[in-house]
Image 1 (cartoon, rainbow, N blue to C red):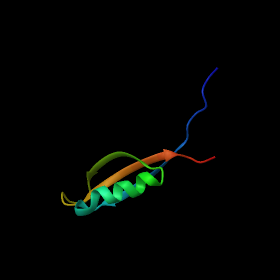
Image 2 (cartoon, rainbow, N blue to C red):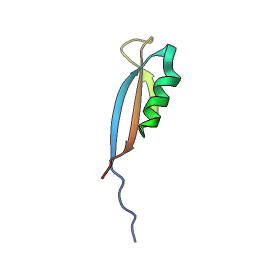
Image 3 (cartoon, helix red, strand yellow):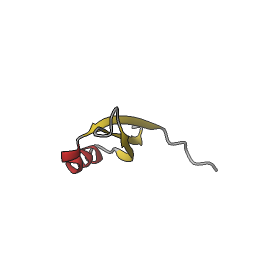
Length: 56
């Protein structure tokens, strides 16, 4: 018996360095799981990538 395939939705959001915990906590409360953080257009900008299962 195979398990059902999980379908994901993704979100990309800017991350403000001075307020990272509050931003990440807010996304987490909405069911988003942090996948990675990378630099944006310049080294001072951070971009967070999130995923969560699609609600059926």
